[in-house]
Length: 112
Image 1 (cartoon, rainbow, N blue to C red):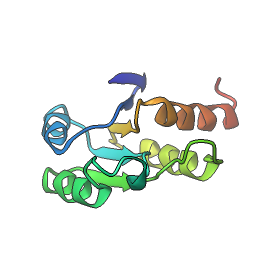
Image 2 (cartoon, rainbow, N blue to C red):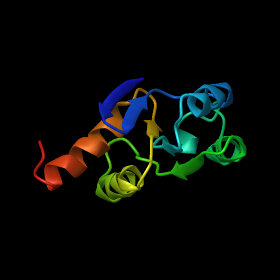
Image 3 (cartoon, helix red, strand yellow):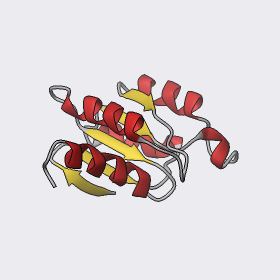
Image 4 (cartoon, rainbow, N blue to C red):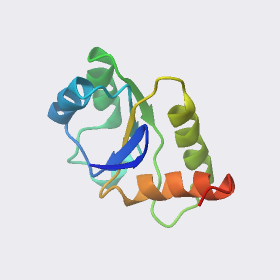
């Protein structure tokens, strides 16, 4: 996990067990940037959402497909991060797409 903004950390694919640790660490929101069909053996986003919500965290499914435009998903991430009191963890396969989505929002805002 890498903290890339005061209230945003990113990382690689997580499991349902990781959600408990994230809740205990004070995260309020989980953003999944990995399409479910990319690696079918991973827990589907719908199941991750149920677990996250059961732990008191909001779950956001904003898949970014490699090689495709992702400005819309980046803007969705920015809106989640901008919520008052939010502490967000975004993940994908390696954390790169989540990071790039954030960097795109910062470049659009003139902050890079």
